[in-house]
Image (tube, rainbow, N blue to C red; front, side, top):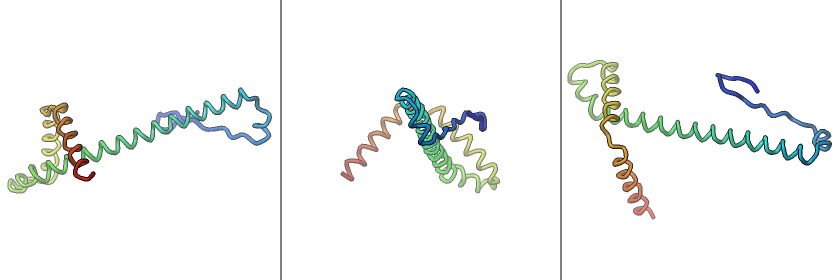
Length: 121
């Protein structure tokens, strides 16, 4: 196994047809089990990346909603720089995370999601 960016990377050993032909059934089952584990780990990594990517998109969408609808108009009137507007947006977003009842919001979201499904189906 090699290290890349602090993470273990498993390399598959390739076997020739002759080597495979000489392996016992138990050896082949063991190699197959190793492949299953490697494939499962690969799928877990891919799923984590997709989830993280979606979470990042939601976070950035929230940032832009707050920035464009709340902070930017007031910031422009007060002649604030983009840096100051972005900083205030970030701070506002994180303050919202502290006061939101996420269980209640999740229920509201699921109700909205269900109603959309009813409209289109």
